[in-house]
Image (cartoon, one colour):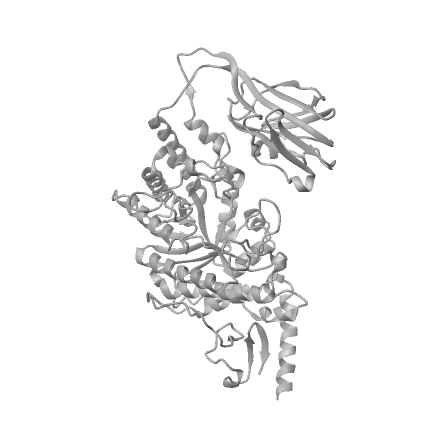
Length: 636
């Protein structure tokens, strides 16, 4: 009898494998028996119990260009999830250039493709301090021409690298063999150690946020020398003008010669946009290049500061233009948004950044910490100029105004933030956020529908660290439920930390053991089950996994090299896929507070082939069949 069952199972497995091999995201890692049980699972969304959780959406962070290729990412997303969230494509800097021009083509194509595929599209994000078109925004709050002052020839922008020891974005210095340093005598020093294939391989933003007037003539002067003779290429503009391959946009220059002596290399330039950066490239050169300064000269009248009220008015107009354009582009198909992203501060529990009630203040530019992860370093804090209350109230007013015009009228608006599960301050950031929501809503007009908790979390080897983290995840869901708001896990991903140091650094994916992968799966399962247990169905929006696959170990990559995905980098299922299945399949609603985390579990974990956990702890207690025991498929 047992031999017959094994033969039937083998035939079934072979048949299933031959069908499923067409889409590797439906399979576990190939050529490894420890992953064959994953081949039997259905798509993730098929495990959602809509009889219990009719409003629940299983979301995924999406790289829009990859999705629009309608290949692996498109198929994997559509098959496994019910909601998609653009990782970057719907953020302001992706749609608005440094001259205030707006382009929503990618947004329209993405929203159309996803809704046609039957997915819900969640909007991310309308108001944020990061990934902003800062050239345009800074010009709006910067000095304005004095109408009573005649123009005169003067230095309108300059940077002295002996004092301002900084650059913006750089290409991969390791890959292209160069380094950037500074000293008080020579300023910027670029050391090139290899010749590269392309003239643009060694490149960097030497100067950013240059307020010029499009169409006017200027003289740009670079004070430069080298350890030997060489040339500099570059571009004056922004990323759009640099990458669009249109010679009519931006201002590109090449073959600016330098020698071993200091000299002022001057060139006449005519910018095509108002907000610019200077991108310098050093082609075909081995040695040192020194840049002491860059300056722009041209005719300009006297500039006078704008008043605080003028700055606020300019930004309200800019926010109106941005939100109107986005809502119109989405054509009523995006039913919920992160209205405001990462507004609340709270770097610790040492008394800094708190108000008189002990709650965390909002983030501001004067509290910006160097090294904070934001793409491109393009932070612009609207609340600096609009105020802590009006910043959010204006965004809410405009979102609802244009939702009424373009749809949907029943739009849901969330406040999204990170570290709401914080165990180091007993969920103080979440408590502070809820207090801020009360303040924003105290005008009787502003309405915040929900709270998004990002949950960029870690799984800990140390039991004390792990249990404390789990207790505060439970507390987080309890506090969010008590707020009465909709609850959404918005950007969940996970790393793994060994040892007893909570901040000791995450283990890279290629160093992780099988047991550590499975422990991560258990923590994902725990998050889902606590969400379903504690959040009533009427308050549920859903859970969104931020990273579909593990992160490549490359510069400027979010959690680079870490095991943050449900699939590996080759799009094969990992053990955490089973954790998602168990969590989706095993959640039971109770809404009971105060349930303590069970710190001991010495029983075997036994699941049926559909991912449902069995009550029995021994195979002898179960009927004949196929089971998953401690991650391995077993036939009884």
